[in-house]
Image 1 (cartoon, rainbow, N blue to C red):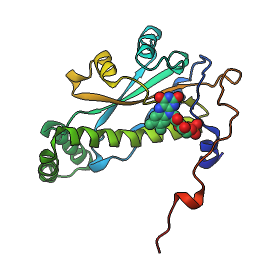
Image 2: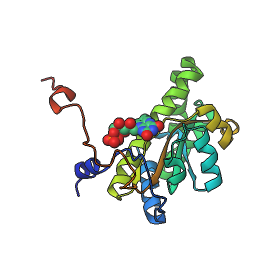
Image 3: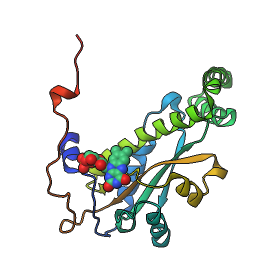
Image 4: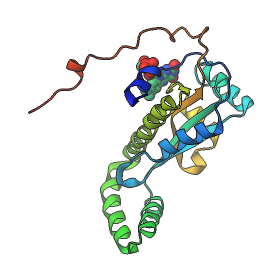
Length: 210
Ligand SMILES: Cc1cc2nc3c(=O)[nH]c(=O)nc-3n(C[C@H](O)[C@H](O)[C@H](O)COP(=O)(O)O)c2cc1C
């Protein structure tokens, strides 16, 4: 199947059947998320993978009671940096330089340039910027899941403050962004499974400027 066929196949599954996603498929989806591009290659986010049924039950309580959270196989939660700190930026850039056999000085100079740019913009701007990067990884995970014929529901429908508290994110300098239950569709019970997928028509979507 082509990528476009996979994207036609997928949909925001409303009812999952509790079947487990094989570990290999999970790892494939996580790798697609890890290989996402990010601004300056900083990857300012992490993914939490939750499978514990009791924890999933608790998360469902602050997620509009969405059933996919307890009927899924794995719940992926993206959590982004709450800010760009010197240490964080340094760690990534120095590691990248080392892996590429480049001198530390180039990483240091780039770090100074980035922080000079980001620091005056404030913590809220930085938090939003990091969350934007997380969404790129999220999108690739959605596509990879479709390729693996694993169903997934993109979800912003949860209480971020409660999720942050539940996962202890403040202490890690992270903020929850978005989540993705992975599993398999319940063909009989899902009201959306047979409804037509509709998107803005091509001619209204992309504007060619020549
Ligand atoms: C960022 C984001 C947040 C979403 N949040 C939810 C959600 O909380 N619950 C849900 O059932 N669907 C959620 N959706 C699914 C969208 O409603 C769905 O992707 C959209 O209607 C297009 O339909 P399709 O994904 O089935 O093609 C979300 C989608 C995105 C991209």
